[in-house]
Image (cartoon, rainbow, N blue to C red; front, side, top):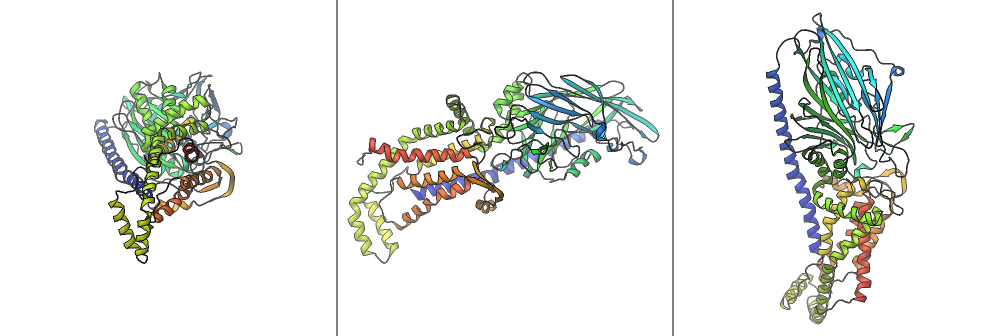
Length: 631
């Protein structure tokens, strides 16, 4: 029994490792190559279609008049705040950017009454919706003061006139940026960028711009236990591409990302996004920023880079609960013809809120059609991971149970009880088979004792003769001994998937636990302790977060699991191999507990509750309803 369980567990982990290494990895690499080829094809086609002349060619640096403004005095920068029931957004005329975004539905720390800062001001100017001229960085669009054209309770509009010279010929164009926050409980911002050709030769001016989606979004503290920072790029005719920080090829510095705007050279991992409906997103653990482009938006090339300077959000000398570490940020590069004395506009939508599929559908319904909603929701599938079908099923049950009891912790307890009830016939059959096996083994005990005495000095010969005798009497280890535990593994992974992605379980309290999606810190250490399971990182893709405090639930889980294992019926045999396997199995709860020590408390709660119900089943139910040994 123990040998088969160990083999099943090892095979499960091996399958998971092989799936990630040899199926997901090559698939993502192939998709990356395909998208790169498509991007190159689009760029080549755009180059062929672009008419020649001064209006379309990059300006020679030697002939440009450097009109880059001096450093702006912070005292001259003004800010405008737009607010509705769900969002509080702060805009700055320095670059006409979204400098700060606070969401009112969620808090940074459980029980706090402050708003959560999804976007924080960047000290180097990497703020959301920053726009720069990729052909002439000296124009410094992102670091110039834009003129506030209009502002009211619902919207704000900025404008900027840009001029320079090429071979003593004056050139100029005008830009506008408009932001509108719908009233009520809307979780999105309507964005409109416009441009017009003002002065120069020809009927139009071809310009190339870089647009920064965000400078990295809020990341939960202890994010190693859940989803790390990532960005998503979605060409609607292809699959969504989700890139974590670790998968971004160019591990850039903040100054390097600023060079995107200064030189026009896009760093990081480039992804082509074709024309039509599409989006890009910068994601945290549960919340994110989706930039959904309108159908008329020019074709863009998206690039994901690693951002470090905005790693920890700070407001008024306090932290907001965000974890330290790098972020991903996405830069869009697009080329447009600016028409003479006629403003061309490109509309889009910036969603700020949960990336949970249900929340996205509820908050974007009416703004996106069904196919668009399905496409946006595909990012959530990536958050759920390979166990997404089970994760969605577990979430639906948990939400129903939460509606009954009103607490997510007790919902997990009830879920565990439901699983034990469903598996009770399997458990009972397994226990009955083990008792019947023990009954038959007791009848063979005299012959086994005789064999043991006969081969007292040869354990190998004794084991061979023992197995031969058992086969002659039709005795083999009963099947299904490890089946109840094995059947719970999908439930466990489904719950793991739900805890790391569902906004419902974020900061969900239970008894002494403040947040079921995080470890249950009873005591927080002054300095993190290395996780012993980190030695597995060389051969296993699973992370091993450092130990930051004393967590009670994993300890209780290990104790309950060991007690439950000791109370289970065992085969009455003196086979040395079985004895060795049994001893090894006694260490499994300890190894599992160490592995789960720094993971979500909800996982430990599930396994702890399951072991408690197993103890009750072993001690109480058998007395009330004894197993028939002759079954």
